[in-house]
Image: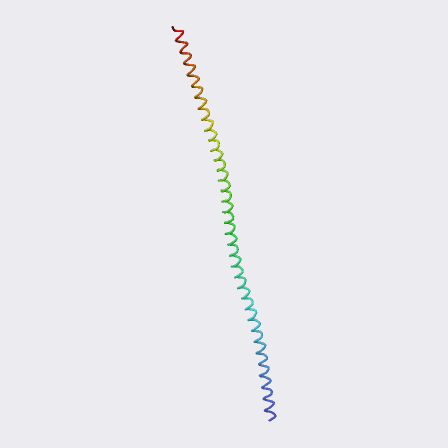
Length: 131
């Protein structure tokens, strides 16, 4: 019976040793799997960060294009405002021209009236000289 107990003890020790070896092997595989999982998570995180960075760059490009358009519109608005100011100034000058033309017309009518008077006087004198 003692030999059976010894055999069972050796067999139990062998099974225990096998379980320990299996546990060590399983622990190594688990460690490798965790390392692979961490590496996969890192790659996934890197890919998602790259995607986020690309989207952010696209937003920045669109914002820059929008800013350029706004800037261009502001410059055009300033140019149009300046042209409108010049146009109004030209209209004011035209109003002054119209006033000048009206005053000149009055002066010319006065000169024409004086010329008619002078012509009438000269004709009268010529008639008197001719008689």
